[in-house]
Length: 340
Image (cartoon, rainbow, N blue to C red; front, side):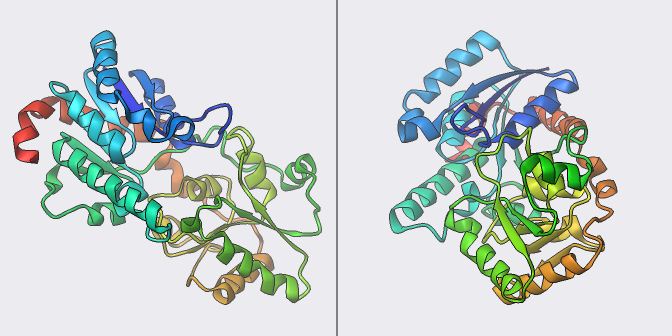
């Protein structure tokens, strides 16, 4: 099968951490034998201008590559343009988070832009032959008029060959971290949705109590180095207002690293029943208490067995089934009248 993947989230030299989960998903599809062409819409570099002429670019690439299915690997304007360009091709769209729930903590201008992006996502979802969501919460966020029979819940996979337990001390030496400190890894940017201020506030009670604590912000780190950062850490901290299915949580579990998180996305489902992982309320004191529990415990968990079904190959096979289903559905052009 030939697949054309259209994405505006993909690693680039000036943003090596951007869209790694999309890159890995494509790698997984190639591993199981699919021929995948990638059309990268570099929104970070060009902004909204990157969408100018996108429909024509997609059609030109489709004429040259001749895919069986076209997959928009994120929502928003890009997804709407992709599904419109698909015309006579089966279309699939994946929603990851803010592309379907917006950005409620952003400033007024950004919030308005995000709201427009959500409208575009909904338009794309109505036209698509199949919709993939990475968490149950995102499926529930879809408008009621979208046919639930075409929605599939498939989280992004992880590379279990790279994300695996390593010697903590060796990883700390490699990064220059002190072995005497309690190391907290925060995988979040300055985006207010990630609530980095809350993460920092959760660390303060530990420091005030005399615990030598360091919080490390996983920013600008290439995916090749992330396993080292994870294995050097004692715990991964998540404080986001909303998420889809945060990849860092699955990667942490694959490395047997504890997770402390607010109840967001599918985190509670991922860590349920794993001793040493905790869900906390979005308050600094409760987060600090859960972090202290991790510090007082063994600091390694039995998490790897819980993510075996999330290997790149396993998730790729599930996506392949979706593509086969989409290929049997009416083309986007035939569904357009229903989507209006």
